[in-house]
Image 1 (cartoon, one colour):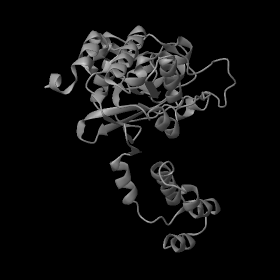
Image 2 (cartoon, one colour):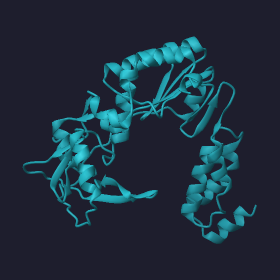
Image 3 (cartoon, rainbow, N blue to C red):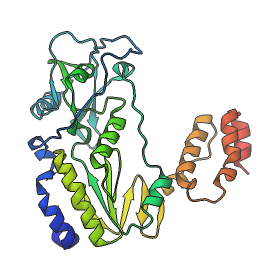
Image 4 (cartoon, rainbow, N blue to C red):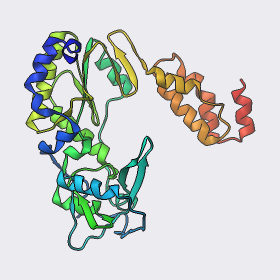
Length: 322
């Protein structure tokens, strides 16, 4: 079935790089070789180190989760003195209560991490860059942040407590507050100098104005990712499409607009009566209208003014009626 869905030119390119197109279960076979720093131990800390160990019930699934992450090289046992110890948050999966999601609550150590600032493409820049594109591929990096190795000096700040003792991360994890910025910059540098590719954090879009250019760009991107030992989730990669959803927007050669599901949510929003509800409405309006509605700034002025003044709900209701 797959052979009839993916054009032969794309299959030819893809098949050369099957070694980096893996499933989630195959991830332990190949991990990224890029080493990153999330915390400079010489930097002035904005908060004193905190040992924050909380009592929590231990579901039997946690042992399995820890064993898997340790075997795959994502975590390791923490030994010796450590100034930071964070608690675990364990949540059953909504659709399968017998399985769990495990998070590390790093709110305390995150106060000592200086966040990096890196530019990401704006929607306006994307619309200009993709104006001539007719063919698209969306690439999904397997296991995302975990493909980046933490250097030794950064690992101690990720230490967390379990019923089996202390562990720490060997790989970049979601609890680190600057993980998205680090990942964005690492992938940007990895793809630097290549044509026909954009990344926003772990979302990578390859494009071209013709099939030939598209396939050429794809080959170069896959070669660059392979050189860094970065692997892709083959189940989530979308190969050569005339239209693509990227950053909750819909792109084709002729159209650039918010995804229909986003517009539907906007249409279903209730009339706001509180300041935080106005903020949510403005955020959705900016997403759905700022790039597409002529005179949007003028049309939204009164709502923005009202939000700044944080007027009472009766004034808000009065304005919303008009």
